[in-house]
Length: 163
Image 1 (cartoon, rainbow, N blue to C red):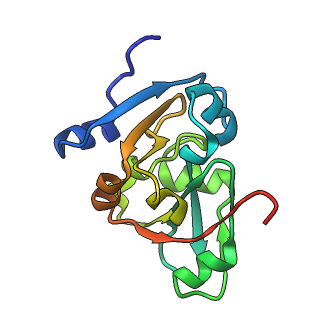
Image 2 (tube, rainbow, N blue to C red):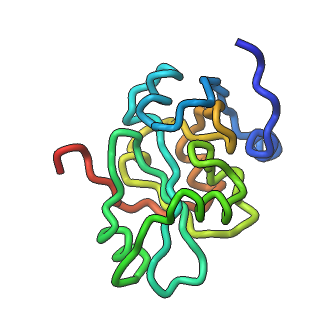
């Protein structure tokens, strides 16, 4: 496979001295579980980034959760001190972030200064895999370094299949 082109997310990690491994996959894939299989990691180690908004909030939030889980909107709303929260439709998420669904990355959106939430399952892992900010490239990063860099809040917001 060819070497990944340097993206802003990679430049940010380089500038902060944070090690990462880039993993490429077919950018046609959008489903996080399919991406996990394509890059060779279990779905619980590959984190998708969703754009959500609490009712009454001025800014959306970025929520990172394992590929094999779904977002619990009630727990998300409680975590941000709101009565309700909703996922933004794909078109709205793309318009607000400037990134394609399947390539939305908190690393590529640090300039937005949005709340960033990492599901508690991620904090329990030494490394997680997240989007680099472009479909077709995932980055494996040390979780503790990612938490510091993104100033993430760790919250239990994901439901495993069958929950």
